[in-house]
Length: 346
Image (cartoon, rainbow, N blue to C red; front, side, top):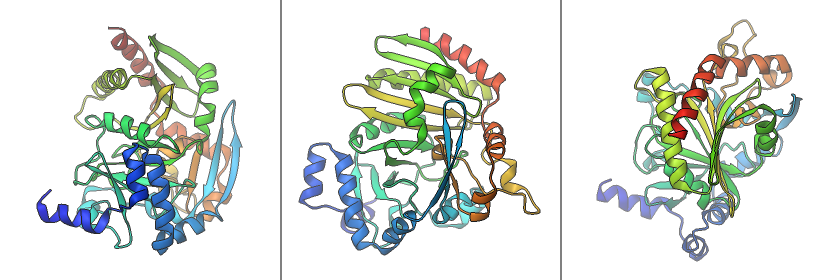
């Protein structure tokens, strides 16, 4: 970043006062983010309107065997759900995560000298943030997984952190970013232990670390749990090698990741494995389409429908079809389980 851009970042974007500085000095970025949100709601009308709209969202639930999915009618998410993410569309628009393109009212907190904590003006969670890199790098997780872990620890007082892959729901696949939201908003956070017991297979366990593979019939995912950041990074790298070698190309394998941290316990990382970005329902014609573009929050159990017609008509069977279509197939999942178990035990 050149000197003029850095000066603009510090003068025009960063929000600093004694309260924020006090939280940052204690490494309590969760409280700092919460304070930022309170101030931004007062000073930024678009954000205040986004949260006002969130108060009136409609929700309905579908119960499955040991878990649930909530359908949220949230018209404020239409831009994200319908975002054009092809190369030409991205080339033709300004990046909305680059700090020089942020609305004048939008302020942020600098994290780790290279990320911003920003309030998301189109919230899903009761409290919702975006954490973009201050530089314009492509969305990719391999070399920044450690930052997903460190941020989820540093913000853990109130929030969890998640990552959407560039072909798995990220509306800005050209700009590296995470998101954060209120803990226990997604059903899977409360259901994880029972899902692991009912549908999981333990792949490896040693000295406080455990890895499991879970297939609940709707989703197939890998979990990594440990209080050691070094062990988690090494384990994720082994997983990444197994997953990417299965696909045999240079693209990032399709995944969405949830990371949460609990003091005295450590991290829980959930990695949803994907087969497809958007289901056939998204593209259907003659009134048969359902505008759902599943990303981490949807797979975590809160499915966003920005159109009321879709909220009204979507059924439990539709949901099953959608998730079975976008989730990695059982044959590939079995290969990953076998190979990952071997790699983790080496």
